[in-house]
Image (cartoon, rainbow, N blue to C red; front, side, top):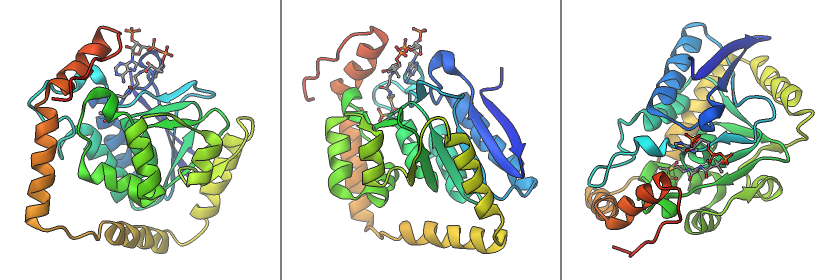
Length: 259
Ligand code: YXS
């Protein structure tokens, strides 16, 4: 079964998350298919991509596949993990990737949505980033995606509460470029993509790369980097992280001890 459906519509690449039975959880396999699909579109010089779920999805994506999170004492969001690799494939794609969001978005999938160059949502869209529910340390690049998109104070509220941000507020915060009705979101997003594709693909791809370089331009000292890693190790070595995963698999609320 292909976990990502690939299509080209009026010259626009369309990637559809295609595992509703698992609420489009970002499994290692699904993330690898996103990266492979982008590679294929790149060889076909597809100028703009839409990333979506099935029509009128209740859940756009349930985030990282929890059953595949590494056990305690291993970094759950390592640089070379398939999810992080897929995020970089989106950032490095030589053309805009537009997230078209219907339904709720959880955890790493919210990071996926804010890693895309733009997002169009409908009234059913909602966004939660949930490491604190899993006792899990998020990673520096992921936190930067949120700071760059919504600013520190909104990003902190999202991370500390893990509460879903509903469509209106997501639009107000800038998670969404456009908030349109579920009846018009497909046509609206396709028209937006086509309006970009009508411009110089070379200029668009170079300007996208300039944005990437400039938004990454937060030089940190080696000491600062090592301190971030030491802080994250403390969390992914913790009993809280172990409890977070256990609670999900046992379908119960986690009881965190804070160590
Ligand atoms: O019981 P079966 O076998 O049918 O499978 C169920 C769920 O176990 C499965 N499923 C998942 N499997 C792995 N990883 C997931 N993230 C995941 N989410 C769901 O899909 C089947 C249907 O799920 P069910 O019955 O709960 O569906 P629902 O429609 O009642 O509820 C949909 C959700 C999304 C509200 C619910 O499934 C849910 O709360 N899922 C977990 C959302 C979440 O906490 N995601 C964060 C994952 S961790 C992550 O992304 C980052 C590492 S971080 O933690 O840092 O944010």
